[in-house]
Picture 1 (cartoon, rainbow, N blue to C red):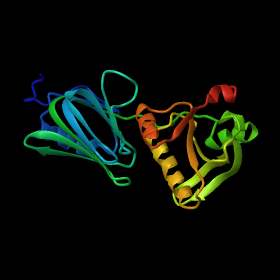
Picture 2 (tube, rainbow, N blue to C red):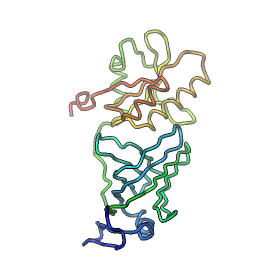
Picture 3 (cartoon, rainbow, N blue to C red):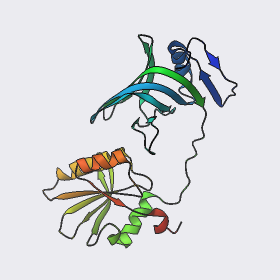
Picture 4 (cartoon, rainbow, N blue to C red):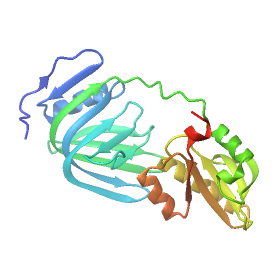
Length: 252
């Protein structure tokens, strides 16, 4: 267990700051001062409570917390690629002290979700400035839709496209079609890994469509891959996932 009675700042420059042996009060001051400009990496022993569309609890354990200036927060353990819990961009992150314990709170307003992290032992905090250029690609969701219009069997045999860019109060549905049994099919495309937000987006589209028709409706999320959490929620709501190989489809 680290000695937290001494604040230690390792050699740093304007793009990187590393803090060890830091007490909770000093940690809060540093975190609040730098959260809008730096990506924060915290190694600590903590427990976490999530409340929102479901309820989840992480027991006490050593993990990594990553907090980005846009409000994204990720909790990683020692296995698998996906975080065990996370909050998306636009969430509000705050740092406070309660009973000499560092608390990290993340709130998302729509839908209402709260992630509360209670830190027991704080090992280190790193502040880093990262570029945000993203991966350049000529492939867009619109181009995926165009491929399916030319080859509807990419969705499934018997699929027949009806309309693209269908307006709803929640955004535009990429594609609406009909399957071989005459059921309406709402299709949402993602050119990269589908996250939980994409699943809920598709669900809102289907709910809107159901309010305007008595026909049976299926929902299909089309993407190169889907997160484990996204897969669980999709299954819970009866939504389907169709894997599509973007590189092969566009000869990349």
